[in-house]
Image (tube, rainbow, N blue to C red; front, side, top):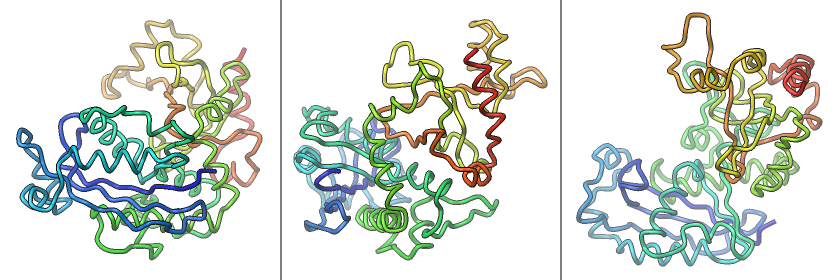
Amino acid sequence: MPDSFLFYDLETFGQDPRRTRIAQFAAVRTDAQLRMIEEPISFFVQPADDLLPSPYATMVTGITPQHALREGVTEAEAFSRIAEQMGRPQTCTLGYNSIRFDDEFIRCGLFRNFYDPYEREWRGGNSRWDLLDVLRLVHALRPDGIVWPQREDGATSFKLEHLADANDVREGDAHEALSDVYATIGMARKFQQHQPRLWDYALRLRDKRFAASLLDVIAMQPVLHISQRYPASRLCAAAVLPLTRHPRIDSRVIVFDLEGDPEVLLRLSPDDIADRLYIRAADLPEGEQRIPLKEVHLNKSPALVAWQHLRAADFERLGVDHDAVVAKAARLRA
């Protein structure tokens, strides 16, 4: 368990972390029980003279470049503060969709300002986490205690603003960095309060060694994987079978989605498999489907559950045929 959590959020002048910059940074430090232990941090960052902010991003956040220039600090000063906060020993830094979005801006900004872009994620017992897929895990397996807002199509909405409003944890406006930090803390408190055992388990997934032990490519046992890459109709969940480590990137494991037919993978040549992996769905021959291979990133806190820890009620809720999954896994191992 980390000594403290640093919840943070960014507003940015665009979507590409390599080409655009941060407009606002906000963070709140809590203890392990999610009680605030320091004053909140929030500041704007002055835009670069040689980069044009995205008009769309400005409309979403309401932060104009003129306002950030007038009220903000330089990027060098911003990343000096950010590095100090995130680099404090025994800190778990987290946000909402932070691993896919915010962390990439932090890495690029640290590098641009002559800091090690990765050190704050591991040195001194530090780690990073992301509440988005964790809440998908809660929704799929232990939904009690949290209100799950519905989209127009009937699927659950995992947008932070919708969850915050439904669970009455919103403070301020959506797409304002500090307000989104408070909303994230509010959802984390709901999770920790109502599902404490699952909270403790999900925290272990920050460690890529633990994630790797679940995706054991030698034992090749089914694992439940929760991710946005699976349809909402399946509760963003899939029974997968670990096949092999990525040939070039050791922190990734290639898995097979056991919803699919393993015979397709077994009968095709390597070249045919490659063709089916990278062809557009619209260009596939009639009646053919893309081979359901996925990459799981061990260093991105993947939401995984060992097969033996699932109960009959879990399979029923997920719509997973236990016996069919076991049979398909055995066929792939043969």
